[in-house]
Image 1 (cartoon, rainbow, N blue to C red):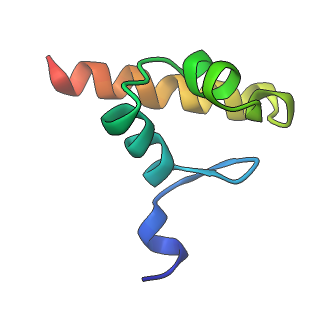
Image 2 (cartoon, rainbow, N blue to C red):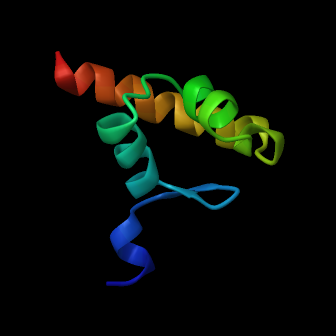
Length: 65
């Protein structure tokens, strides 16, 4: 197990593996939910990083349809 197992690094230490965990175990459904309600990582992320997390959630919604 190494850092590549964590998937994409979205910035501020947030990885794709953590986003998957938040959606599976915490039922997070939006970037704002993770970045502002469940963590305060939104304070440390750039607009581009935040947009990338938002795009990840949008892709997950499309894949689930």
